[in-house]
Image (cartoon, rainbow over all chains, first blue to last red; front, top):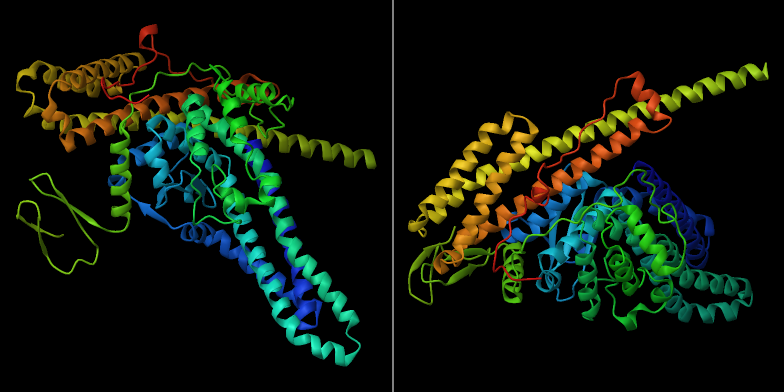
Length: 402
Length: 192
């Protein structure tokens, strides 16, 4: 496990260097095109990269959660989700349970972020809570806990913020070229000596279009393996690969896209959250291995829930004889054939109960107060409710709003 | 001259390797200790939840006094033995699991109780605690396995011998039938 974590740190460093290099290249192009001095552009890019680095180390997770519309919840807001997170924390042997967030969306998806296990956050959509039963949800949370335990979250958070910055800068640049290009043409033709500048502009434009694609390629090349590894970790923690397989099937069978996800944050999620039409090149490079393949690997692990068991199943299904090491798994003496324990009957078994629980969690996450009336009605008071008392519309009893 | 430097280099490298191995062993041993402590934390959590459960259920199940008393007695027994040997402790905790299981089975025939929000919440908390206990045991066993492997495998076995790292015992439950517990199952809970 330690070797794996170290390897992940090394990869994170390489990725950051390459990302910064891309940003410097972009700065060179933008500086040359707009400021008349590529060196100034490079300088500005380095300064920007520095601040983005610092910023995303301390606030990258908050930024990502904000951009995804995630709200923090407490134990009583959704006890089942909260308990599952704590169960998986114990199974992974992590010192502290991650903070739990909920996203108000019909799509079924989840992600983890934060810079280390002590500052980890796990976010799930309401749609996920509605569709999955307790065991399946445990499989998904186990997958996210795998990202936390393997220190993927630092890498994913830094890369996401960096990628977001590059995409934004490039968009800004392209926009600027088109706007500036219109006004600048007359000047260029009257000067007569604008050919050099024209070439520079073309190069800059090409770079601006290519930079985000390169950044995405880089990100995705390194993120696919993490998904396999997190699946393997989930199976190790829950000893129940079948539940994760079923969860992945349910997630992939619902084609609802996640509205708040974008090109930069797509790589974070357990399954690709983008609309098929929006995916474009991202699908070629593929953030995520095909779900059908992940499901088949999990299904052929029967009875062997350890990392080695996953690696065997991986080679069987894909035909690629990637050993345990090839998956980034270097863990001598991991339990290979642990008996799968019998699992308890899950709470929130019916779909109706799950819908109610996840909607309640969304209300509570928004600060609504719940008042149970003895007549069986439950009143929900908004956080800015102006009065101290409220009357139940069903039976006319008066209640205190605390 | 060069030979001398190479010699010093080799010695320094060896010392660094030994420090690394020693630290890895300490880390694993602490992990085993922490994992053991986590089991106790979760067992205590279960003990703390039971009085609430009994209190909630009492009003509904007037004719099931014996079931409730056996849960309370099993809890007391488990608390009394929590300082005892691993085998005793495991036996008492399994007893508690059995009595809880029969309590939840009996609860099935009380529809009013099953509609009680408090009861449902406690049922989720207790079943989650059962899960936590078995996950804590699972992690403890995995940690013990890693630690013992490290102690026995070359070359760290030399360091382990030198500094008296002793292998730990994994958590086993005697009777094969009890191996799968504790997992409370709530009949009629539905689901898959």
